[in-house]
Length: 435
Image (cartoon, rainbow, N blue to C red):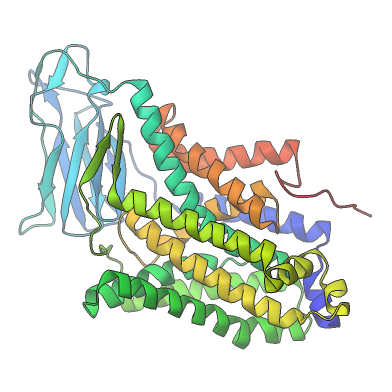
């Protein structure tokens, strides 16, 4: 038990180092991104390109916002001074291209039936999409309707984030490890569902069950083969965190090697929408929120009512005292890894339908948001991770009402910084004595 104690120490320096590494990772990801002009987005990243030219009466229109949605992308682009725009997309598929009429000059509208447009590639890797404009009165969606839909999307996004964040928080609470490879556990669930539903043509419900079982097995295997031996050797939490970063890179590029860089769709990824008054949802949205709520309630029952759940909370609170009380700490940690990996796999499946699409790096795309939810709610607290995830999900979606959609993830991290300045331990975290 001495080695477990040494691996589980949470000195203030370790916590500070963890937070600093998170923001270093964010800075590196931002610096590493290829620069793009407002009218030229992702064209160096992908081989396929959608383009267009927005003009009225022969004059180019600048700063008109175009949205491209489809497999693996939801991108906004603004026209340049010449009225032109280009967007790179991940695969040869059908995309929906929408012009934001609020960004057109006063009195100019898209001709009836011409917005949005459907774009499908032919024999080449480029596709031109042009809107026909004319004079008229613009019909706009009310702020209230937009607010209702953003809240619904925010709750859906927050709930699927919570599935991943609770698993990450439980792992941190019992081992002290900030697991950067958690993103690859998210991706694994989606990739396994893709493999068994598309490659092996199994019913999607059966593919999901198999994917969750394999996710649980992966969590068990990682702890048995890697993390437990490292704990037994007394490796510190900073070293363990660095190992998790290396593991994340190895798993991520292994996924890319076997699945390629394309974004692929799960069965039923484009369902018809249900119109409930001002609210537009799909059956998948409703199913996703329902599944998330049921699973989160089950996790709460497990933690509060079962013996293993109570033992998990005891180990998270004080591993030495838990061991002295007769609790098998290593067994509890193994169960936590299995549960955490399963929740991450389920989060990845729901994220694949929310995006929509499955890609080799999809888990990495939301890793910082998952960490933000955990830190915002309180390190090591499962219920704090839930609260933090809901806040992050709502803020990400609601922020698009006032800031450009491309900045919505940055806004969530700004909220994290502000909350930590006011309450460093997080919303549901407890104060710890230093010194």
